[in-house]
Image (tube, one colour):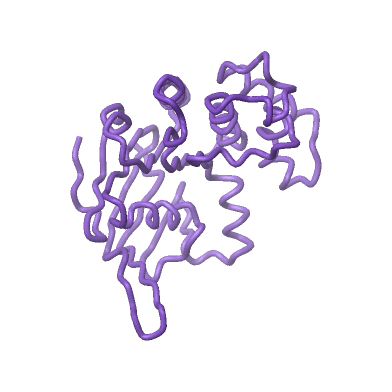
Length: 228
């Protein structure tokens, strides 16, 4: 199988005056194409920081990161933003939909933002994705008229808009009730299985971890405990 993600020797420190806090210490991490992987760890373990570094939202203090065959830790800020938009998909705990946009417009936004306009092809793909996630009857609803579970399904469709090499999810069911959470997890599993999409899911929820093929446990700034 092809490696979608290879991270080597990732260090992350934060400085506050003369005080330096080491959050990550030499983390090594590899994901293969089509994997569904849980990233686990207690609060303060560094798992969210690691996810932000992989998502090119933070720069590591040291280390090397390759995603979809391209080294990304050395990219400029402009190049990082472009890569993030075109090659990564994001699903957050809080959906971060644009409230005045329809479901279709929200899904198409990653492509439209890059192009500077919405095209007919973008709109068509967004509507196909919404149908895929079970929202064919909500395509033209503004985000404010959607339930929490529906908003998160829109967020999943948005993450798929640009055919990303890697989808990063940060506590994707943390703000949902159990029924809605199960539906969202079912959908993510379906997308992983049928589209061979690669997921790295940051979570503290053992229910999510149990549904992943592999789990990586971050402890004391290291991610060297890997379990099937």
